[in-house]
Length: 435
Image (tube, rainbow, N blue to C red; front, side):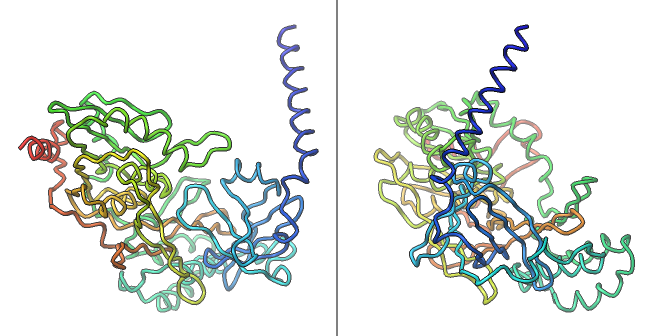
């Protein structure tokens, strides 16, 4: 009886919610100037924006396939896809994706390209067509062939003729990616879990999660819905272990706003310490916006952290500057930032932002040099190709992809010591502060 009563009320609430969404739809659908067809600058996307729906297509020179459909309701887009459709300065469409440090620019098309119409193309793609889509996806978006010494056209000439049946496709794609030693590059089959990833240059990479127990033995306080854990060590030294650079934002809240709110807890707890150690060594990444918000707690003025460019059909987009988000009451004591070769993605964005601050000393190893956001290209058979498609530069204009963020003072990460539950680098930094 009670169960039926509860179900009845749940049904009524769902009905009211759906009704409310439908009644308010005209308030939240895209304005007339944003409707129509658009091609992104970089990213290989074509968008079809209407009053009631948004469809995104992934486009290459040989394909155009639908990859995303959503209701054209701004609140639903924000919650379901972390996506906002906004007008840009020139009156066009700008895509803002929560957590990223750059907007996605577009230009208007007269109509949906023929290749994208009627469900996209190719229909019923065979293995050779799937290989062509993957090869073109990399050719049109990947920036680092020269860095890895790869003749990409030559690779096509060698491998494409070997594909005569479906069983030939996976080995051909594996050979296609051979030598692309970029941790952002992969091929994944969701149906089987099979994956092709580059060889790991870091021998202890697979032990990183287990190594987290070493800093946790210090008795850390975990900040809910974040990768932040902190404590005050002996000698009145603040310590922050950064497990990852992401947050779980609530309804209607951006990751940057959420990051500022949660780091305030850390800031309040460590404000009166004599120095702060930020342990970024086991941070595989997250969100650039979160990294910039965290870094903002160490400066009272917005500061340029880095610029990023995205591969497009003419080379690269214009550089997009990324700034720290300043706070009114910054932490001003000396800061010691520990990085390692495992530090990646938004962890490296955090390292770039903090490196510009005079009270910060970075120690450890060069970071992994894999800063780009990952561009996922869904293939017609359900496989997913992931790749880097952006270049990050520090404030001097130096590209850091493949090189990493360099430390001010070298200090090796010692996996053998971590296996014993010991952290020599942290002990050395604590001794430096004590001296």
